[in-house]
Image 1 (spheres, helix red, strand yellow):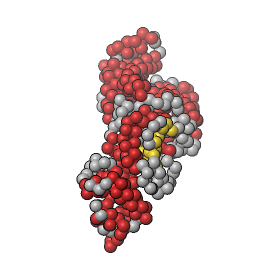
Image 2 (cartoon, helix red, strand yellow; image 1 turned 90 degrees about the vertical axis):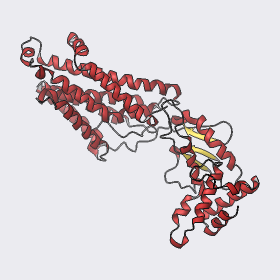
Image 3 (cartoon, one colour; image 1 turned 60 degrees about the vertical axis):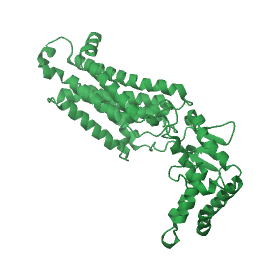
Image 4 (tube, helix red, strand yellow; image 1 turned 45 degrees about the vertical axis):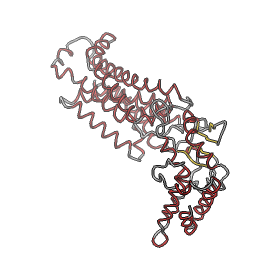
Length: 423
């Protein structure tokens, strides 16, 4: 068995599977580094998201490997050997699986090195989530082996891969209980803890499914019956239990880490690796607002924002959305997007609530002036709007902005019109 495995690893489909999985892994990682940069849980979740692409490739590799005997017309020769027939097929599956997992591990291992440089939170259940992803790759290659052994077509491998992709895509976006059996999901759970029973049952389901597929491929019906029973037993609690889409927050992950000097900027521990760069963007704006009645005093990661809280209720806080703000190297992806969080302080909602005769274009003019002043002339959507306001003494500028915040809070149209014309 060991010698057969070594031969398969060197001369079979395995080397090509490793290269394909490595290439696909690098491609998916490069496509959305903002999903995983700087975060261990984000990287594990992104592996699960990437199964939408990686599993179909494993199905293709397994199907192509299992169909080799038929393509070369050596089935009778293999059957004439004293070794049990299932040995060669299991060796072929194991070779493809090990090679595919190795290719994926190299790609995601490179990403892990980048994450390790800057990550500020290494807790949570990220490695368990990643382990389930590895088991999914093994199950996918077993499914390919079954197709390759049972379907006598050269195009069976690509067709099976495409069908797997479509099936996983449907399950990923299908908000129903059976969809939970899919190992691929849409991610975005880096602040929460997936219940342990979910991970354990998913691992059991995938291992049993792998054994079932291989047993059917080699016609070991007793083994298939046993594995099928275990698979069903694991699938029932997964598909009928409570949804884990609303899993409880990980208390350690959402613990706030704040700046020690200057205006307060606080990020969750998961995102704390961005604190220095985020503070460099947010603190100058907060300092500009210091002392103005009704203006915010701090900027906080939106992850800890109470559900249903309104801007008015959070007048002292600007909430920063950081989910897609990391680069592969752990830096801030787009400072300008981060600055737009302060736009909530410049009352655009008031203008959008007005209709018909109530609306006055000068309200937009006042909003643009406030935005441009607040961002110190760098708000590209309102650049230059506060030129007249900036000619006033600093105390008058701050008084204007204080009056603006008061008028916006009451959606006082006449006051906003006066402010737009004042400078």
